[in-house]
Structure formats: C-alpha cells, structure tokens
Image (cartoon, rainbow, N blue to C red; front, side):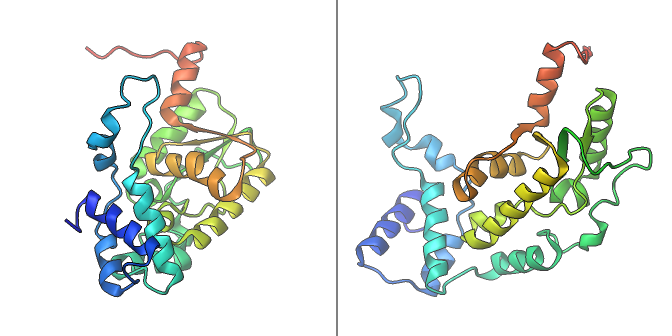
Length: 239
C-alpha cells in the first residue's frame, strides 16, 4: 500500500501528526512517485464532483508528494539517488542533462539572429536545447515566418521543474526569480514555450513561489491558435 497513492497520502498525514518520523527509507519510497497525476484523475473520491462545471479535487496526491519531499528536505532526507544527480547537474550546468551550459544555444540556425530586446521571448527549455533540437528550430522558423518579434535569452537556464518535483523549492525559486528578471530586461510582455513541462512550471508554479508574473505565458499551440484566428497564418489541410 505504501507505494500507491492512498498509502503515500496516509504516510504524509502520519508524518504531519507525528506518528512516523522522517527517514531515508521514507524518502526512498516517496522518491518513487513520478507525480504523473493519474491517481488524481482516477480517484473515486473526486468523482462525486464531476457533475459541477469545475471538478473539485479532494485528494491531489502529486501536490501532497511534492510537499512531502519538500518537508523531508528540511529534515535532511533528500534528494536521493538520481534526484540528487539531477540537482547537481542543474546547479553546475543549468540543465538536468549535464550538458555544457555554453552549448545551450548551439541549436540556433545561422539565419535566425538574436536581439537583446523583443516583444516575445521564446523559452527553449533543456530538452529542446540539447536533445529534441528539431522542436526548437521548427519553433523559431514558425515564429519568424509569422512575423513575431521574438528573442531567446542569452542566459537561459533550466526552468526548475525537476527541482520543484523533488522538493528543492528554494533552488527552483532562485531560477524563477532570475528568469523573471531576464524577461524584464528583455522588455518582453509574452513568453512562448514549446515544452509542456516548462509551460506548466512557468505559468502555474512560478506565481506560487515568486508572485504574480509581469508577462503572459503561452504554449506554442496556443500562440498558433491565436495567429490562425487572426488570419496571420493559414493552416494547411493534410489529406
């Protein structure tokens, strides 16, 4: 039971009530959760609210797990194993892959010129910068073709999603504050990302840890939808 959602929620309650104490074994158990959210979506405890317009979540296990990890961090238990290595990579190279930080913009095509200031910032993200570079190059070509005034931060770093998921909230907050400062310096009022993880972190998590953002956050798909509605780009039907 302890490796399932209900068990983890029960352990969190037991820790809060003082029935169990922080331990390495407890940290190892909580580290196994992927925080995918499937348990939250399928939990029968939430189904009673499905008839209302906005479904009210009673048991948000991913959030419980993330808070659990944060509390264990405060007592010296965590991060452990691979989580610890990922945190070290982010601290040293600003990405969880351990790739050189100086290579972050190597994917940028030679015909796309960076500017220091623009109305929109394209936040590439770590995976698109180092692994899925086709996503990054396709995105900037779309933005250029659509006539979007955009730039890419010269000091772009990891968004900190992994740090938040593993309980390292203070380190994630530093990245969030640095990112917000860089956006302000760029003069941008809009941030676009093609990464679902970065989108969730910047749009939903950042306001919780650093306060209201001074810029709009859009996923590329949302921006494309806007451009199509405005007639600035035309969708092509694929037979």
